[in-house]
Length: 187
Image 1 (tube, rainbow, N blue to C red):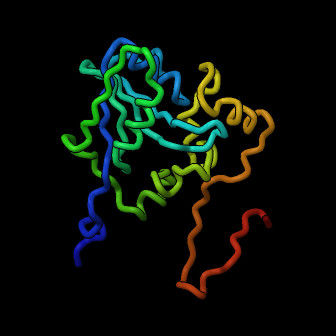
Image 2 (cartoon, rainbow, N blue to C red):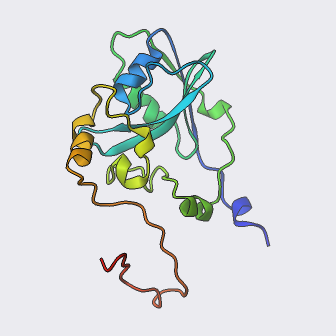
């Protein structure tokens, strides 16, 4: 039998290159991660949120000699490119969507992704969730200064009010034999 991985079509991917003196500055200003000090040759994860701290996009930022790259391997680039472009005003930034000319990194199959607890666009990276609810807290740097959604995310931490988190659930059987309720510590 062919493996599930071979039967699954390749996922769309994003490869955006920003060039110009202000490329890192813009991404630092609009993303949740501290990026203004990112050295050439290094990368950091970041998320882009709305004013409520809800997820719009998640990506990895790589600072390369040929520019600053915004990469993700689970969604096409056009929507993220348009979103970044809306936030460029008079800064020295040029944005190129090179998604079609790049090869995405190998993605694990969906079951492996779920077992590893990795968020994916269209599933966990949606406006229904905050970065803290889908295990993307390492993408948020609350001490870096202002960014869209920062106040809402800060309140979640200050008041210990993150109510949902990813949880791995497994069981035997198929519907309707699968239990309706999932309990952890009697809750």
